[in-house]
Picture 1 (cartoon, rainbow, N blue to C red):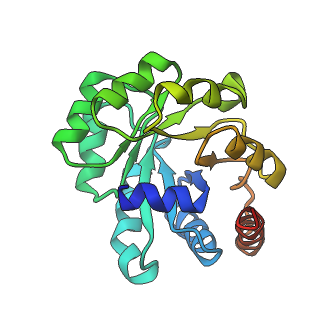
Picture 2 (cartoon, rainbow, N blue to C red):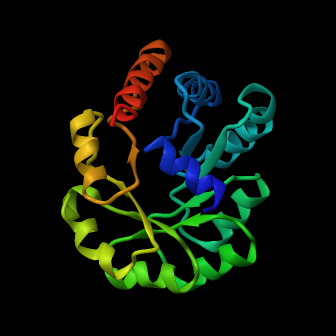
Length: 211
């Protein structure tokens, strides 16, 4: 398995967030890193996303060694090119299309596309992609992945949207066939306090690794 996908699978949770302020973004990344997180999705959801992401990648090798920093909410080839140039470790999209998949393959960047239907998962599968994001999770429900897994036994599924930070909720998703869950505003709140975030994530990782 691709080592980035293996890291995500081992970690079981993928924190995702965006903040306009670089220093706040850096503080959040540090808090997550200090808790043991080694794969983070920074989301392309604001005017400062590319600039902030580029700065984070610039300092990551020295301040956060071993961190995989990916970018999410990429919707077209132009955005993908911008973040490949910024040295993103992986790209996560909310959508999938043949154009976007083939462009990612041409750029030699790991793509985790957002899918909703078996037909969309099949687009990814036929192009050699081995992990997709099912979104939105709270719409499809916890039985959905298990019902389509037999069609794609070689595919790994990550769920995003509507997942809480409660370990029992996450374990229900995991037992339903997903290998990881994306945690956004439920984990990284607007009024985030770094020490509290580190403590919460550290405890969550510990609880998840008890199973």
